[in-house]
Image (cartoon, rainbow, N blue to C red):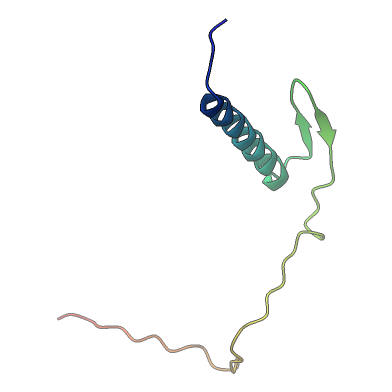
Length: 75
């Protein structure tokens, strides 16, 4: 077996942790109701009722008139 330095070990652990994190984020953001991997299988509810994000506008606007758009038409 080859010897390795502490920097190489740290890099390996960091890469494996980053890869695992990327896979977990992809699973959480997916809309699949059934997920099967060699190690884990999962049936989950993907209804959008719990995932809705509501945002409050930072500036109050009058929604009765549409916003005006200025264009620079070239001849």
